[in-house]
Length: 482
Ligand code: NAD
Image 1 (spheres, rainbow, N blue to C red):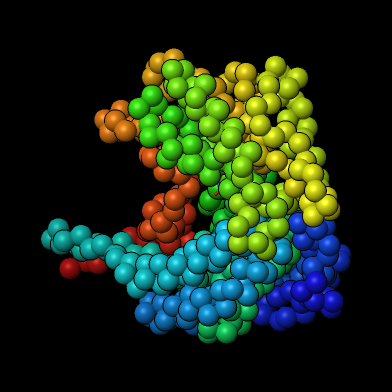
Image 2 (tube, protein in one colour):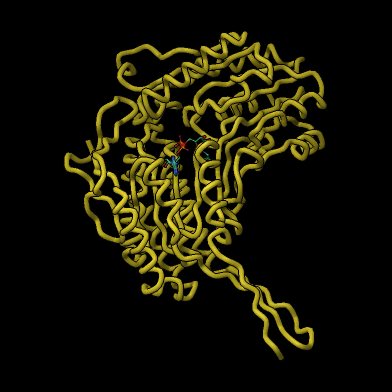
């Protein structure tokens, strides 16, 4: 247990108990409670948003010179690094990912604050040369109060990805973390305060999405919502945004194809495909969950892949050698089990996994074995719907034309992977596949300076990169008479 006492939340800069229900955060590896807090109420939402609007008007944050805001954000990055191990351990308890993974999420949160500190200092505005009668200049202004709504699968990284650019752009913000993982947003808010972000500029409002998230999204003072989560919720938010004429960014679900060509480096491809689907227990929007393998290679590749999946170390997230931890909740695991049963009823064969692992240390937690299903077509529901767990559907392909057609045959278009030694072919496929991110001979690598986002049902807008900060700003064109 991190704490026996109810944890405070942050409402308009005041650390106090929320006015909502009591929430218990459970450690997915054991099912034991690790923290309890009282969630936000609708009154807290109102107070937080009014407070954020006030802080935006009066704190002078937006008026600070970019290098002054940047200095504060650099301090945030440094404080994250100074507290990295404690944060990683807390994040492990909050969502059960292996400690090695949570350490890299913490490192990426620090890098994100550092990147947006620099982005804020180097944001260039453009001046068009005089055309005789006037000179024009394009400038960007902060929006006011913006909201970040985040999922549970990599909390500190997704929260940093929204908080850093929103603050760098000069805004105030309210953060609504996922019900089951409220701790990291609260930690980041504390760190921001310690680094010098004015009190009241950030509120963190844990609570039920359909109540608290909904109220935040609908609030007239909220000028932008940056949402990461499921496509159904994203669509609901997009409807509200359309009514309010409010810009949104939506980072949504995926069912990403991984393509292994005849000439792939097999050792490399087997390791990459395993990592692409089974790291983070497959609870990753970009999980490479549809696998296409050249038919001539298929049997050998699947044999090696199944051996690799079987050998993955599933277990205690605190152990340095664990490769796959538990799933987030008992309910989520039941959903995954229903999908595996559906796969079998659709004609699939379980090549590896497909069950809960046995062992006393694993019985209490929400563990599941890395699962590979064969024998399904690309149109099966199991192949098409996002499972958000450690389940890979493997299929052979016969021609490049068929491969591209099937890879693109999905409502999602978030990411894709290509494994081939033939540069020209890999390039051609990488260009032909429809996805926001394509990895060639690698998978799940990230750079904060590279934009990230999805096409189609995988989302709207881009996080990270230069687009990442501009999302939180309005553009203005100014004309001077000469
Ligand atoms: P979810 O949509 O259920 O919840 C996400 C967040 O939205 C939570 O904070 C939740 O409380 C809130 N929410 C729920 N209903 C709401 C409403 N009516 N109004 C406002 N907010 C509401 O998603 P989840 O189960 O937490 O996360 C899993 C999903 O997230 C998967 O589909 C996954 O692919 C997606 N995801 C996408 C990315 C990406 O970058 N594209 C990254 C991580 C996760």
